[in-house]
Image (cartoon, rainbow, N blue to C red; front, side, top):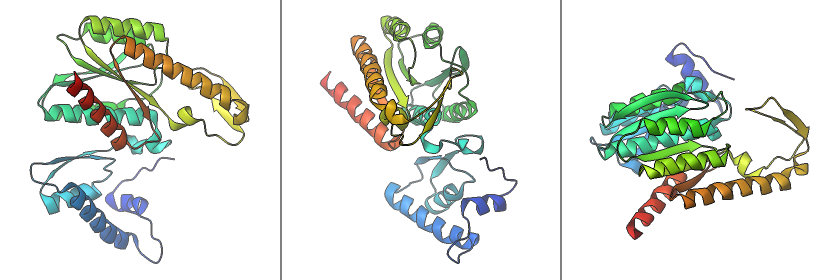
Length: 287
């Protein structure tokens, strides 16, 4: 289901429906004030702070934070109609949020950031820049990106490497359901050119845990196949297969001195990023 609205009143009526004897306007006034105070106490915003508001919608909280703390807020409506479907656990959405958040962190250090999107070919390129406007260009491009074709990761990475100049940090967000031999060949070429590479393997929690408990129809997203079955008939074999694949991917990364991060969409983005940044700091302090 997708909600399309023409004005702020319609948006308010969808965001906060009347309940418990309260009206939409009553909930809006009371709950918005509570939320902005809670966020303000947690973040302690200042005039020098830029807050990245993912899923900003019509700017309900952003406006209050600006009015009360004089901070700057960058609002990103993650997709047309918020990509309703799998919600916050959608793999493409998770990858986009991580890419944009890490990109913003890099820009804060005055380093340049670029973006390349691909499936079976390069679909878009945002050229390197260290201006804060780059985060807007990146989020807009990610917002317009759709998962359609099957990935040809080896050829696309080779194409991307040919566009790079000096040594760079290359962060790749994918489920890496591909030919690992081709992927390793591409990693070796990147490492030969002294690029630092990080593999973020983004998996939906269902792909990690396989917690289905009723008759389920499995539909192929990259091949036109369907399977209607009881999940318990597949669970043990599937979990063995996915663990074996992930172990091979992790070992391949280690062989090529490449960082590997498993991203489970069932975890919060903050926890995943915090664990990655803490690990990266520990590794760098030991080197």
